[in-house]
Image (cartoon, rainbow, N blue to C red; front, side):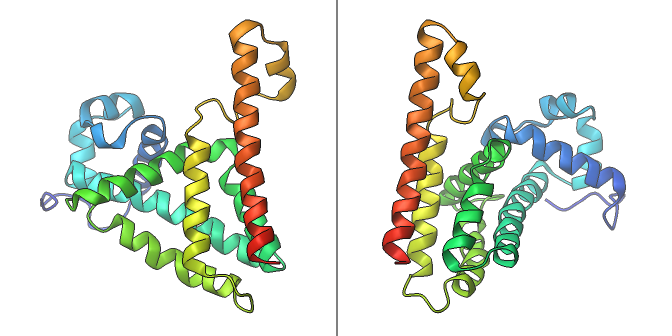
Length: 211
């Protein structure tokens, strides 16, 4: 669907503000079930404004997915600049990606990746585009090592998905969890054990791959 004739021809501050609010909203909801009316209510706008600014729900979703993918790519590029060795760079990247505040962005990324299997808009090329964007910088990071960038990317994403499988990981600190009672304390302990297992698996992979 094309944008309406009176839609803005270039990005505006209001459009960027709405897009950022939508990214935050979608990070806490299910993008595949996104509906303009509850979205508009949740971000303080209206369906009419959303359609005026983005042309269609599909285009809005595409831009939300692009923002999520760009954020991950920016993290990779930042780790490449600030890291030292390949090991240090990948450890830094893992630390940023697994920070609790990025959980919503990771959920959005993986949902878009799976929806791309449908080969339908607006997720059509999401998976292949993310590979095209990630592999070149990973190749630079791993230059001079025997590591295969495709394998490193596959393991990284697999472990991130494993980390997301536990809804309680990253919520609260150890003191708060220990202060809980009954099932809450047990759930916190199980979540921490799950997270540590995944973190340990990433370290073990780096040990074996970059030794």
